[in-house]
Image 1 (cartoon, rainbow, N blue to C red):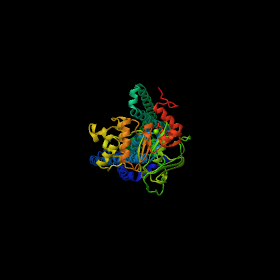
Image 2 (image 1 turned 180 degrees about the vertical axis):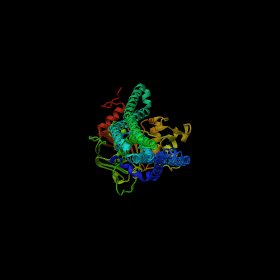
Image 3 (image 1 turned 45 degrees about the vertical axis):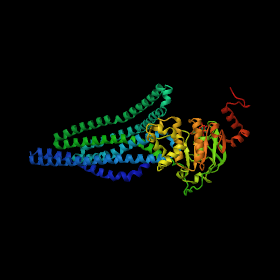
Amino acid sequence: MKKLRWLHRYMPEYLKLAVPAWVALLVEVLVDLSLPTLMASIVNIGIRNSDTPYILRTGGIMLGLALFGSLMGLARNWLSTKVSQDLGTLIRADLFRKAQRLSMSAILKFGPSSMITRLTNDVMQVQNMSFMLTRIFIRAPLLLLGSVIMAFILNPGLAMILVGVIPVLGFLIWLRIQRGLPLFKKVQAAIDRVNGVMREYLGGVRVVKVFNRHRYEQDKFDAANQNLTGLGVKAARSMATIQPLMLVLMNGSIILIIWFGGIRISAGNMLVGDIIAFINYSLQILQSMMMVSWIFTAGVRAKTSGDRIGEVFGLEDGMPLPEEPVVPVGQGALEMRNAAFCWPGQSIPVLKDISFRVEPGQTVALIGSTGSGKSSLVNLFSRFYDVSEGAVLVDGQDVRAYGLSELRSRIAMVPQQAILFTGTIRDNLRWGRPNATEEELEAAVRLACADEFIPKLPDGYDTWIGQGGVNLSGGQKQRLCIARALLCSAPVLVMDDSTSAIDMGTESRIRSRLRQHAQNMTVLLIAQRIHSVMNADRILVLDEGKLVGSGSHAALLEDCPIYRDIYRSQMGLDRSGKEVV
Ligand code: UTP
Ligand code: MG
């Protein structure tokens, strides 16, 4: 139950509508409970004495009560629907907010597919349960208790039959829950997997088509889908056996009641009307036990889902933040002091003992073979992750001393993967600064050389981009990402291999425009091509997580063997400087 503690915070809001629903429910139950007794009196008094006015009067009261009960039922239904839908909306909103606060490593703990299931399907289960709670939870025990009491009042001897059956039914329900709980946990995990396969397919649909892997993907999906079906059927079956068992038991007890009641009537110890009422109460008991079994089925699912939602709420929020964040001042100096970094959950550092400084306004390039840790290094400045040793400084202050949004608004980032969002080109460009003017927008677009293709698109700036920017070429996406970052007008610009899909001519145009129009900006530039880094103020060479060189192109050619190797391989020269054929 500890994992369900997160539900507490929704209680005040929930109870506001749930309590009126329960009051309406209570009235309904009282009506239901009074009807069989009134009916008994019609039989015992009205029919027995052929007292038609009494029959009509009592019948009229029954009709009135039934109508009133239905009205209450309507109100209760409206309230329960509203309260459960509202609850679902609140939980989803909070989950999304929580997901936004989580650090990268926390999000990766469950993975995107599971996060999506938790936000949709799991919340739905909790929502269902809350609906059931306001519809039948109170009703079932009240009806059960009331019916038992009324049965006792009518005939304590016969009522003992019911008292004997109810605990057996209760035990059956308990037994099923014990079996059901672990099964439903597996069902939710299976939904995660189905979502996961679908997500991966949709994300990599082009690759699947290129490699003609449809059959393989289909099989993978079928396996996940079959698994879900199997588990779902098993779980539902384990719960479904309750109902027939209960029916057998209850009908058995009704036979006993008629049997013993018959004997009593023959002996003149009981009235016919009483036995009719008694059977009515027994049926109500049966009905309420059924409701209890439904609610427990829903409860078992909701508990599993509630736990899963609780796990998300239980994740540590992002990173430890300073109590009193420092306000950033400065023009955008970057520094690392003996920084080391390990990916979360791994023990081998991918960056070791890195120290360097970038002065405001400088352009520093970072080069190194793939996997050498370039992206990991720049991630540290925006504090996507924290260093495991040493320090990362922006404008002379440790990044851990700033508020996260203040820090990140100082560093405009062009990530290695050109990620765009559903919406128009204009929407995407304005991400970093929604209130940017049209002139600023166009200036950023010109700097990124995106003015060369945007006007040619069918709707120019209003061209709709699909999810992930599917309808643009790689180089177009990269240029939009550069423009988006430039529009932030942050003092620091980090470009992580963001011209890899752009042809050399365009790339050098972007570089020269940046040099002319953004001289005050500090630029940290990652690139694979020597051409892209040659003109930087300084070049840092990274090899297997270590900084092995720092200096100008000419200096590095002189004294950094690794840089020389990269240069030679890209110029098509061998180690002795001869051209390779
Ligand atoms: P990087 O992603 O920092 O390398 O990964 P890089 O220099 O930028 O490489 P390219 O040029 O973009 O290809 C450095 C190391 O960090 C590990 C990888 O094993 C890699 O060797 N890594 C990277 C992780 O463990 N997890 C990740 O999410 C990313
Ligand atoms: Mg990289």
